[in-house]
Image 1 (cartoon, helix red, strand yellow):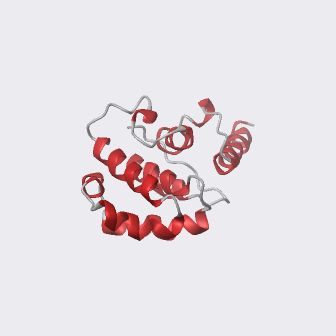
Image 2: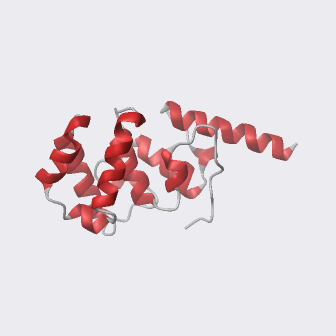
Length: 146
């Protein structure tokens, strides 16, 4: 794994805190997809507290998970993605393409490349928070080069 540590930004994205754990980045992205961070974050931390590792979340009771995240909406879809992605995390060769994991699309793949691998210059994010962070990095590193 790359030794990249993303710089702290004024945006204080959850991914900045999770950069050293791709699985948590993916869980975060499943929660934040189609949901504002302010609504998703408490449920994200509650799920991680209850099931702190991929193998635990993969074995979580589906209906218990659905009940916990129901207020966010899309509870069945999210629960299925969280459980299946977590189950595949150690069993699928995804490092070159996180989208090989169930429920992981462009947003989570981009977040992985930006925050976990440091490949932020090779990503074209569509998500506004990721784009803001990438622009922050461009500005930060352009000043360092000067």
